[in-house]
Image (cartoon, rainbow, N blue to C red; front, side):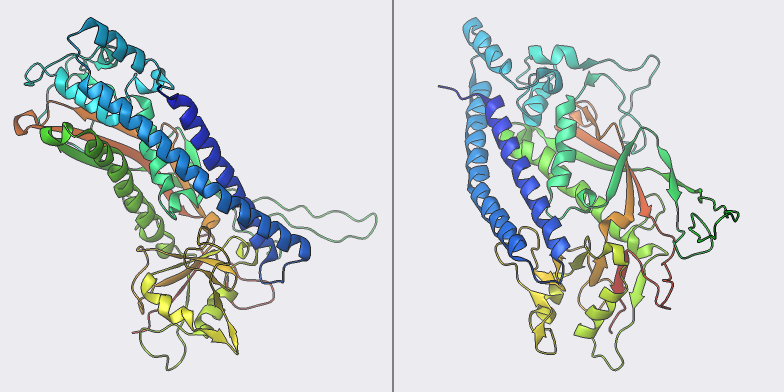
Length: 456
């Protein structure tokens, strides 16, 4: 007996949501504890959260495996259903109607199912067959539009074709956020309906002479007024895209096609977006924090050997982070630097510690109590950017509220035996601060972003 796909998906989603909630609680509690010794109550809470997360993991894996198995069965039935039989056609339609949200999926099981239906809908295709599900998705060309035989990154899709169901556009964005340690899911992001936003920047401090101020006064004396700063930066959203060609042979292989179109395109776009959040030039792309005026670069120690990281480097970096960011900060490192940390100590105390149970929140352990995340976006050992201490919420990211736009053409490369797929996504981002903040009682400026100078 066939299992209800909708219930299986809902169960998997509920388990994942529960796990995300537990991880958030655990991270918050670790942040509150910081470098202090956990109280008895906090230690009990930590142990309980760790146990809950450990117990959830096999449940999520089992639910995912069960859903995958049912989806394979459904794909097999659709691929090999004898459509020339009215009885079989009725059965196939009944399978389609069991999809969780036909309004968003068009009745298609996944993107591969949709792509193969479009391929067979072409009258010139050797296995031509019109799928009833495509009727509602047919798109005619704009009146007077000329056909085109090339891809233009900033243009639309000319010619008639089929609208890609919205669920499959959203799927790519969700997969982008599910990438391990995706920066898109860590920074301070918000949706917008425009291609540019006014970004409010208030860089005043409570101890400065501008912005909102507080004063003491004697009774019956006049109050001094202060004014909130309203500095606005125009932030333009630039277009990130993936343009993918799939051969007819690949189109016949549903599992590989779906992986190519969904997961691989999401990974490629996620990589480009994360690279820009960290290193972007701001010209035609995001402006990364490594090119921000607020970045603090800590100098190496006198006579420090090349390609090394010493405890004093890390201590000085930690001291230059804004005080309000300490509970949210993470270390980003290139994995080439890990051997430097494993034996690093201050006195007889190690400053790097492994996670007590599992590597979910800190895949590289903890450094001064903050999670360490190895990433290939960091440079190799010895170069500037091989280690960074970052408060991700110090970076603002605006994304187009409409989400990822997805276009498909069966005509563009028809003579090559290929179909073309294109995803476009508009993003804009930069650091909140234009420059580091100078504290009231110290000459050492502080920021959301701290890195170490090159040690060549």
